[in-house]
Structure formats: structure tokens, C-alpha cells
Image 1 (cartoon, rainbow, N blue to C red):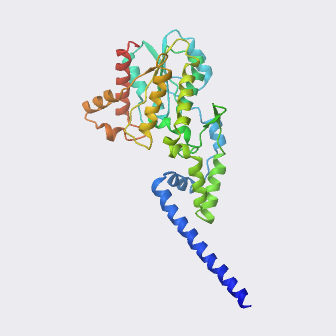
Image 2: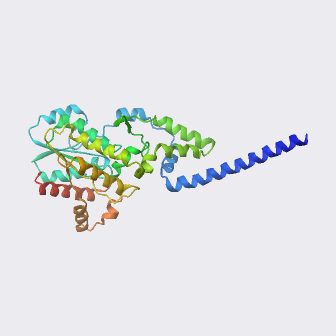
Image 3: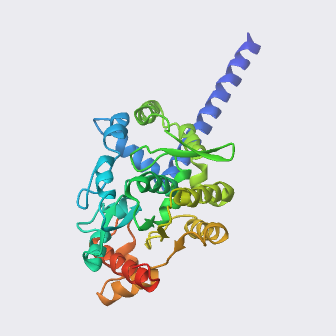
Length: 333
């Protein structure tokens, strides 16, 4: 009886120790996640919404964010445009080029400079990175066949293929298989959020968040995955020239002061991939110095004006002017 009681006490003691260790683990990681990983704030906000987004409906019906102001929504209109004998400039980028967060985007400012010499087609979409931009260009260029094609990512597009979760919307992601990039649709968004709500309802579940970090390790620890990103960039450039058709392709990273871990590493790796493999087939231009000078002339501080994912129309005005000047200096326009 005494031995049995001792065993019970020992078991009870270990249960208390384990419980205390788990509580310490949970609160420690709760602080760690909230301090260093912004996704917990996003997930917390989304999981408190009454209505969960139907991602499947969104993907099927809302993913085509083509620009209304300069043309078209669906591909059949592209076919009509391609028959037009006037010269064309296509612009393919992300939500910045699309004009999210501004009342006038740089494609419209650029249009003011070229007047009636070209028609500008803004083919940009909300996207999950540089490879999707290249993929979109490749698809649309078959129909548009523009003489000049601008590819305009921001630096953050270079890291996005390593992330499985994006800004309250689940996007297509890319995985290497047999040394080739495959576009895949990630796990269902609604199921993903529901699992987070479940974990939050019953216990904080730091193990769930640890799994999240592991799934997104190529995003959070990008500098350890240089080979992965090199292949992303190589395949992106290659995708751009698959349907070049002898037309001009110009790549520029829209300059912003918006900072994130591994930004310089990825930008330098992107440029290195270009210089080593594609400098004879694609032009790469830098407009940062011009944008800084242009904003300063208007009394605008570059750092504060561009420290946003989606800058204002004053920044887009500088983009439009500097792109036009750079293209003229290279005799492309």
C-alpha cells in the first residue's frame, strides 16, 4: 500500500512538472511568435472574423485582377488588341504595378509621356512572387505580342515563393520537383484557418505555430536556401524569354525602402542570376537614384514615401517619369 502511494505521488509530481514545463513553453513561444513573426497577428485577426473567406470561390472568380482603366478583363479582348497595328507596351508586375493603394498608377503617368506613340497594357495581377509574374507575362505575351515589355516586381516578390501563407489570402506556391518548378495550389485556405481557430479555442498550441514556421522555413530563413531561390530566379528569367518573339524585355525592381529580412541577399542573387545567364537577351535597369532625386525635387522624402508595400501616387509619378527617361536613354523609346 505504501509503495503504491509512493508511485501515485511520483506520477502526480511528474504530471505537475510536465504541466508547468508545458505552460512555460506555451507562454515563452507565445511571446516569441508575437515578437518576431507577424503572421500570428494576421491569423488572430482573420480567425476572429465572423465569415471565413471561401478561398476556392475567390481563386476561381476573383484572381484575375487585370487593369480596367487601360483595357480589358479577359483574354478574348487581348486578341482584339493584338490585331491593332499601333505599337504596344506591356507591363507585368504585382499589386504595386496594378495600382493597389493609389488613385493613379505609374502606367498611367508613363502613358502621359508617350502620348499616342504606344498603347500601354497593364497586365499586372495580385501575385505570389517573381515566378508568377513571369508565368503571367508568358501567357499574355502570346496574345499581346507587345514591342516593349516591362517586368516590374518589387523586392518582396523575390522572397514570396518561399512562403505558403500570404496576407490573409492563400496563393499558389512553387515547389522544386525533379529540378523543375511546379506551380501547386496549397492546402485549402478555409481548412487552414479553421485548424488555427480550433487550436486557439482549446489551447494556444505552439506546436501548430512551430509547424507553420517549418512549412515557411524558406521564407523566414531565405539566406540558407540560396539554391532554391537561384532556381526560382533562373526559371523566371527563362519563362520571360520562352515567347520573346524578338521583342524587347526590360526588367526593373520597383524601388522601395520597405525592408524585410534577406532583402539585400535576394536582390543581389536575382541580379547575379541575370548577369550570369540572361544579360544578352533581357535588359535590366535601375531607377532608384532617379526616383530619389525626383521625389526630393517635389519635397518628398524617399524613405518615408516608399516604406510601404503599396506607395502613393506621388511615388508612382516618379516611377513613370524615371522609367520613361531610362527607356529613352537606352533608345528603347
